[in-house]
Length: 473
Image (cartoon, rainbow, N blue to C red):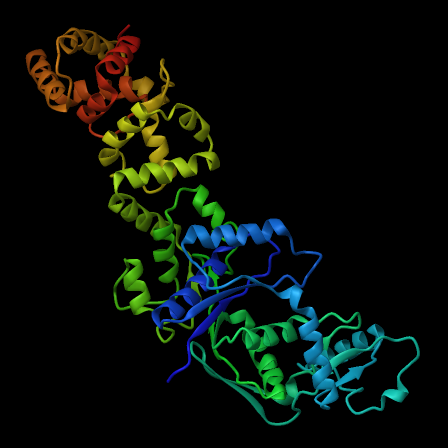
């Protein structure tokens, strides 16, 4: 019987959940779900000065918004420090680690000498075989691993392929600092082992850490998990992803009006491919995802592609669900409180009626919010400059002539108003656009909107006539 696949997502809570972290979490989640396994969540909060409760909350909130659930309780790395120390002391007792009394000044001199000579190995191992009785008085030692000094360390990486390091180039890494606190390297290995992690899927900036951590696993006689180091995300220009490219927190994408399903779909295709397929349901993603089709080159973030994909998901989302998503977004966007304060059942019904036309054009929920503004805006409308320019004296005269005909309509709907407008245009010798464009400007304050007869139907008779009177003069 094969073992249960267990992956983990292990962020450091020193800031928001950035987009690269979101993708790493997604890949871990998909790999585990596809194989009936588990994804665990570990908060690596050993950096006490930089770790914050607000960052932990942001990470949990970001994962929840993306729809990525984890199995079991969250593990907090700092709370396991005693276990990490226990393992360091065990290695010391077994002769697989040693106390190093090198001073900060000595370490600086070693690093400078190594750099001058072009050596990757920075620590010269001077306390590796010395008797502790030679220790200088008053110096608190660190505990270092006795790493292999000859031969090679090899990782058969599921993304990078076979990766080899010469052991002569790898340091005896510190396991326990002089203040008794475990290092990141030790804590990660002990936690992954104790949590039963079988597959480590993380960014390729951890690739060298993989070699160093393998030394700790082997010293302890523990099985080394399968490793997959995924390339980082770059900007459209090929440089490292920065804030100007989109290296923002997941929360920022929510505030920009992206849907979680679209974000998941976009992230899964950042560096992973499944033939030519671009759009995946969650079930398709889970079924298809594997590590072998993750590319070795950095993926390039493309806002235009994300917007296009989000537009697809907006059009495919049921109207009532879009209104619910919009409502959740209102506290996070400029002007959102204006709609939140007015969202009565009657207005909700109007939004629902307008949604088929609104969502055809919108690429984000923010655009959807802006496009819906005409429905709930107060009179007199705040007119955009292009709409003002359309409402010439001639256009206003057309609206004034049309008003009495609108006032005769008893059964107000898209069909009845369309019949009246078309008949009016024909009698007046006008093209339909010469009537529709001033109508659109007067009714919405904009030059673009859903189809104008749908706009009239959604606004209703009283509101439509009121707005037209405001502009007809």
